[in-house]
Image (cartoon, rainbow over all chains, first blue to last red; front, side, top):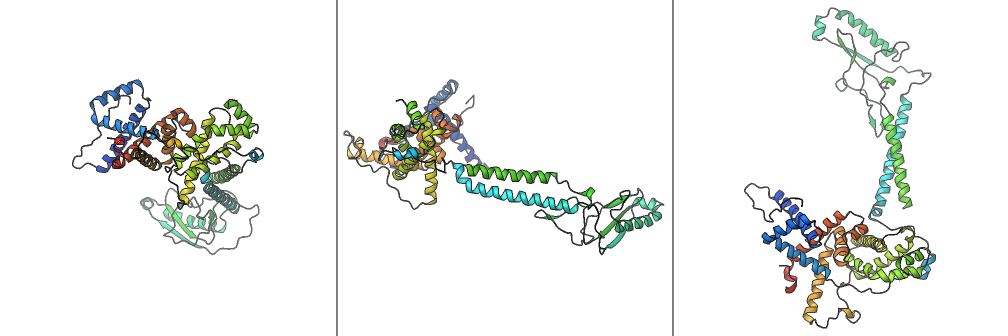
Length: 281
Length: 195
């Protein structure tokens, strides 16, 4: 108890009180009281707590009534008759050579074994599929040593130049346009040209996947794609929107796959451990 | 032979030594199973299974209380039996308290009139019903504490829970049983009423 006071067993309701909440609190308080009374009956209260309870009992008739009822209940249970055995449960002599059964002492957890097995199998399958998908994706997006000849893909290029407030002030604006066009054409001709790396458009970091398998993006409408600045001249912002039937993620933009590999490997190991332990049991 | 010697002999394969232990504990195990399950026939099966399992796994017993070891196995068997009965509720049960006086002369109390005998049996039935409406965890603790008379420490060892958990579960079980009997006070014989 440690200095806590007993709360009254009756609760006076006021208008606007949350009855449900009060009932729950009253129930909790009752359980707390029962725990103290039960421990008192068994002589399990400390000296200080016992003294406190006895002082309270002396002045609280309701608490005395609860203690009496609890004491009578315990006495009735203790007075239940001992049941005689219907027969002897001795083991036959053949038990001496009997083998240990496959099912050992079962615990509550064993009843969940089929569900655990199924869950472990699902985790394992998911981990393997994820792991394999990541490997396939990794292999597919990696640049080849000798790039295969590329078929010219039908490409539509739309160059959009947005004049900003800064552009209006800039006199270099008319000169930037031909450069932008020139660079766009360079990208189309050789997106991974040799020499100095060209600025590349930023694309969304995670390629869309379905069940871990990357899918080819359909031709997107301009409104559906997130517009990304191509490069910043400091004088103008130019956005290039292009659509292509095939889209590959450049190496430099590739998503880090290490976490997925770790998750996949961990899932496989966990599934194997669970299945192995369940089989042993 | 004392209990330690019997256990050692049983661990070496002596069925006779183990049967000495069976005779010593069988009534306690059977009573525990009866109070938890509520059906004598199922309790007898659970008791027999418990002894068989205890013998087969005696190699894992590393000392300590053999009674706790045995009662833990029996409790687990009772739990399995209750789960099995939940899945097959069509099983019919004998009345635990329709005991034959000829077979159980201890039931005969020469000083007790027929009315008192009937009252006692009715009370026992009511209390058993109250015990059976408790959740399994609380039921086991109540039976071990108040029917079998075991200490908090022994119960904690059997149920593999801390002593504090034993105290709180026992308190809740007693409180619920008290409320159960209070609600049916008119069924209680006058001398057994709570208020």
